Image (cartoon, rainbow, N blue to C red; front, side, top):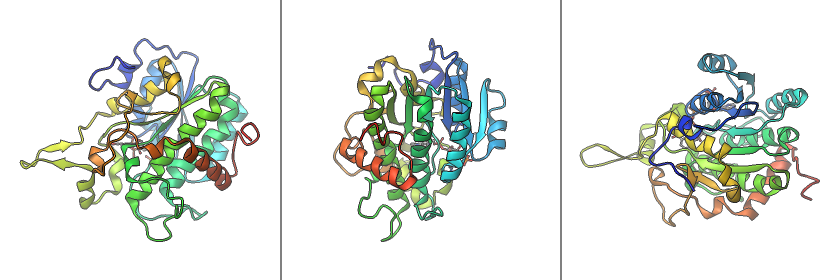
Length: 317
Ligand SMILES: NC(=O)c1ccc[n+]([C@@H]2O[C@H](COP(=O)([O-])OP(=O)(O)OC[C@H]3O[C@@H](n4cnc5c(N)ncnc54)[C@H](OP(=O)(O)O)[C@@H]3O)[C@@H](O)[C@H]2O)c1
């Protein structure tokens, strides 16, 4: 399936790929693995749209990257997502690649004005609404890439208490949102493939980025493992350029169509996760619950109800 050994960079994955005339959109394109994702797409010739909740910061970070257009969008604010998407719909440009890289992790308990838990609202519902609103621009051959995480091992969708009314757990909330990212790709691929739109989710690897800004000392136990000499054993950290590799591979690799909807890892289709409880640092592979088509359809229907958007409401009825 893949010719890449070890951990290639995004630029290496895109060597020989010509994206001239193509338009890509990368959420979170100005922090962590985002700038490397944007730079690699741009280097391959693409125009890259970067919606940002801090547009000035995005412009500054991406100042040296060609063909980048920064917009304003806060994923936790459905009105902001709708307004940004509308500017693109009004513009009418076909969007060939969407990489949903933005995310937050292990935040304190915060609610949106709707009462939604913030990690689910940002990581899943914001991206759900964005892609559905952009659907008229994607129809006919686009790829949508959902940056999930090995953190999906930390939690399935909590169908009985998705909003943590019985007590908040920041890691379970992150896990739920990352499982949602994977299930989103499963259902989008199912309904999108008849229009030539394919979707994938992925774990980018472990990369030291500002994503960890909410971590406390005790959390490091969950995400890092040391040996008796105090040397870091897990996780094997990647550079941001290596962390961006699976995203651009998912967005462009021609041989991937037969794996539509699947969860990817290390520039390959992920294996099934071992059925044991492990620490986040050891999470490899994909849990069955994050690839389940019935759960994906259920999540889609619920997300449509919450956000009031569903590009496929009539087509898939
Ligand atoms: N780093 C890792 O080890 C790792 C491992 C597994 C999965 N992931 C996943 O990879 C993705 C990227 O992570 P990263 O490490 O690159 O994180 P990062 O450096 O923190 O970047 C996240 C980006 O998301 C943006 N963002 C957050 N909330 C937003 C909102 N409400 N509206 C719009 N944009 C928002 C951030 O904007 P601001 O800068 O303005 O906050 C930032 O640009 C995430 O989805 C994460 O779950 C990362």
